Amino acid sequence: MLGILSSIGFLDDPADIFIFLGRLHPLVVHLPIGFLFLAALAQLASTKPKFQAITPFISYVWALGALSAFFAVVFGYFLSLSGDYEPDTLFWHKWMGVGVLLFSIACYYITKKTTKPFLYTKWFFTGLVTVSVFITGHLGGNLTHGSTYLLEYAPNTIRGLAGMPPKVEPRKKVTELDSADVFLDLISPMLDSKCTSCHNAGKKKGKLKLTTYNEILKGGEGGEVVIPGDALNSELFKRISLPEDHDDFMPSEGKRPLTDNEVKLIEWWIKVGAPPDGYFTQLNPEKEVIAMAENFFGLDRENQLYGRTVVAPDKVVVDSLRSRGFVLNRLMKDNYFMGANFSLSERKLELSDVELLVQLKEQLIWLDISNSNVQDAHLEKIGQLENLVRLDVSGNAITDAGLNHLVGLKNLESLNLFDTDISDGALIAIPKLKALQKVYLWQTKISPEGISKLRKEHSDLKIVSERE
Ligand code: HEC
Image 1: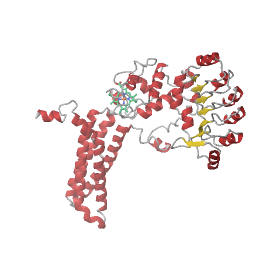
Image 2 (image 1 turned 60 degrees about the horizontal axis):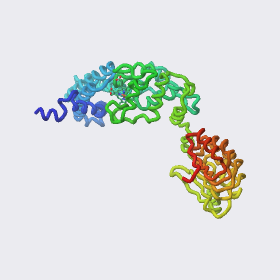
Image 3 (image 1 turned 135 degrees about the horizontal axis):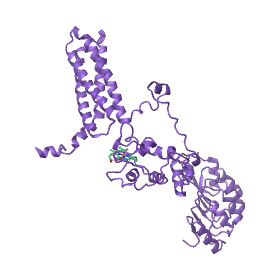
Image 4 (image 1 turned 30 degrees about the horizontal axis):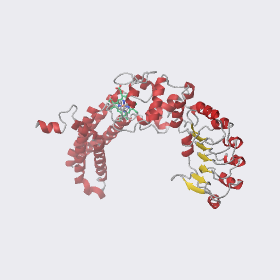
C-alpha cells in the first residue's frame, strides 16, 4: 500500500501528484465555462415553442457543468497550494469558484423538477451562475497574467472607467545609441520579455516582482536581488548566470533564457550602480559594452547590413556583366546579396565594367577583381560599392592614391592588397576602414616598420604580411 502511495508521489511534500493535477486546472476550467453557458442558453431557448423539445435535456447539461466545476474547484485548490498567488485575489477567486459549483448544483436540482413554483428560483440561480462564472474567470485571469493584463491595451476611456491610469506611451524604438535610456530602453525590456510573466503583481514567484525599478530593488523572498555595484553578490545576476540546467537558473521551467549579451549587459548595469535612469552613453560604457548594446538595439553594422532586405538586381545589368566575363552568385537564400568574381576573365577591367558594378551597389557584398589590370581610377568607382564586405584587388598596379578612394567602405571586413604597389601611405587609409578585420599586405611596398606600427596600433586587426 505504501509502495503504491509513494510510487504515485503521494508521500512527497507537496505531493507531486497534487502539483500535477493542480496544473491541469487552467485546462479543466474551460469545461464548466462551456457547459454552464450552454445550459443557460439552452434554458433560455426552451422558452420558445420551437425549442421546447430540448427541455428534458437541460438538467443534464447543468449536471455536466456542475461535475466539471467540481473538478475545476478541486484541481484549482491543488494549484493554489503550489503557486505564489496574490492572496486577496486568490481568496475571491477560490470562493467564487465554490459559488459557481453550488449554484450550478442548485440549477440541476431545480430543472429536474419542472413544476411552476420553481420558475423564478430557476432564473435567479441561472443568473447567479452566469455572473459568478464571469467574475471567477476574470479573477483567475488576473492571477495568472496580472491584474493589468486585460486592460493593458484597452482604449484610455475604458481604462478610465476601470479606474486605471491612461496607457503609458510605449518607448520609441531606439534608433541611435545616444538617445537610449539605460533602464527604460535597455534593462526593463529584457526583464519584460523574459521574466515578468512569473514575477508580476498577480504572480509573484519567489515573492519577487520585476515590473518596475522600485520592485526590482525591493527584492523577494530572500531579500535584495540587486546590490548596486556588486553584480557577483546580486541574486538576480547569480540566477541568470548559472548553467541552464541548474535548479536555480532563471527563467525557470525551460522558458527562453536571456542571451549571453543580455546577461553581460545586466551584469554591467549592476556594476555601474544599477541606475534607475539616465542616458546609456553618459555612463561611459566600455567599447565592448557599447557593442553589446548596439547589438541589443539592432544598431550594429552586421544587423544593419544583413538585416535589411535588398531588392532583386536589375537582370539586364546582371546579364551584361556576365557577358563581360564576371561570375555572379547570389550568396543568401532569403536575400539578394551577391558576389562578383572577375579574376577568371581573360579581359582587362575597364571603366565601363566598373560603372555596371556600381548599378549593383545595393546587392554586391563580395568582389574579386584580382589580377585584372585594375587602376587607381577604377578604385574611385569601387569606393561607391558601400555594401562591400570582402574586396580582393591583389595582383594589380594600384597605389596609395587608389586606396584612398576606398576609405568610405564602412562594411568592409576583408581587404586583399597582396602584390600591389601600396606603400606606407596605407597606414593612414587602412585605420579609416572601421569594420576591417583582416588585411593582406604581403608583397607590397609597405616597410616592415610600417607593418609593425600598424600591428601595434591595431591589435584587433589581422594583418597577413607573409605567405599564409
Ligand atoms: C516560469 C516562471 C519564471 C520565470 C519566467 C522567471 N522566474 Fe524567477 N522565479 C520563479 C520561481 C518559481 C521562483 C521561486 C523559486 C526559486 O527561488 O527558485 C523564482 C525566484 C527568482 C529569484 C529569487 C527571488 C528570491 O528573493 O528568492 C530571482 C532573483 C529570480 N527569480 C529572477 C528571475 C529573472 C531575472 C528572470 C528572467 C530572466 C526570472 N526570474 C524568470 C519563476 C520564474
